[in-house]
Length: 379
Image (cartoon, rainbow, N blue to C red; front, side, top):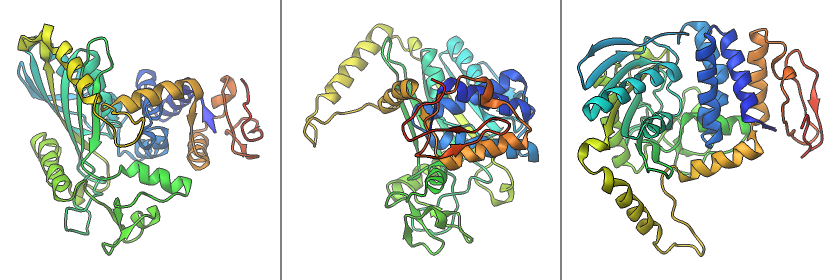
């Protein structure tokens, strides 16, 4: 089934407001989750709504939390997210970094104790929109222990995202958004919901055997994700843990903190104009990108893509055609609405839905929305 992005934002905002968030925060969290779906990072999209609400209800993450400045000078700030929702405290921390970089040419923001920060590419895009270059290193100190080190079987590392963003003048920025592991945990959960297998070389079971079955990852005892590129990815993951965990004061991956998800993020933000290359930077960037793209391709009529280009195209396509959610994810969101006594939800929205075959989808408190495969309801 497919949903219009603005109506998903409205529903997500309604859910988080019912869970205790102030309207601005509820909309901010909903918008950033849906933005992850728009760019194709479904693992960090609305599939996270039920988990976030559960964490809010259990006190594992807190609504409406401001950041607390631990220490700062003109360039550096150490800030505590106080276990607030990552989409809120992350945005505030990055804006602080942008403001400092605009004054001093560079800033370093050490964010500790943030709730799940969502798609880390958001923060590189936010800096790029302000004309800034940025680097972001992220770890999860507790419940994010997911990855086995190179040569190991047991979970010892978090997914350890790394993101870099470079503005491109009038063009689209280059956004490298990756993890030091082979697959995001959210994508494993998505595969589980969709009844699909995970690609080769991503997972091992609890005995260290290669597996494609997401159920082995969530088993008892659980399996683990593998690092990218063997020892290289494992080494990169270790460095990210130390920068985002130990340096920020957020803690490296630690089983003693496994009861909650808490992110640490070290962000370096650079104002290129301070480097005296304002007139040369964008022309040189454009020349170099064109040169790289001019390479012969392995397959006929192939294309060389820049980091972030696939996400930009996916966003344009999904803005037009809608965001597709699997039945289990939608069912879990509906169950969350019922839990929060949300009885109207989409009933007041002009929702575009495409159903699976002859399935019937029920929104708590609404009449069922049903139709044949390929049909569109409420267009």
